[in-house]
Image (cartoon, rainbow, N blue to C red; front, side, top):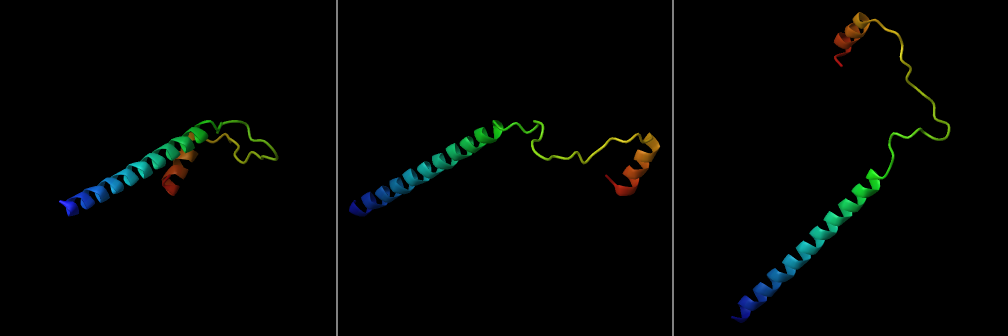
Length: 72
């Protein structure tokens, strides 16, 4: 009976540590998610930002040709 009590005690300790670490991990991920959700990704860039893409007037055939050549 004494050995069974020690085994059960160790199982309960491991279970409590496992649940504690799982909760810590879960709430840590939730906090990081909330932090990133509050960021406004689509705001205008600040500082010395440069626009690197300009829309050009291309014909549909030219774009289709590029699509087939590059496989995009």
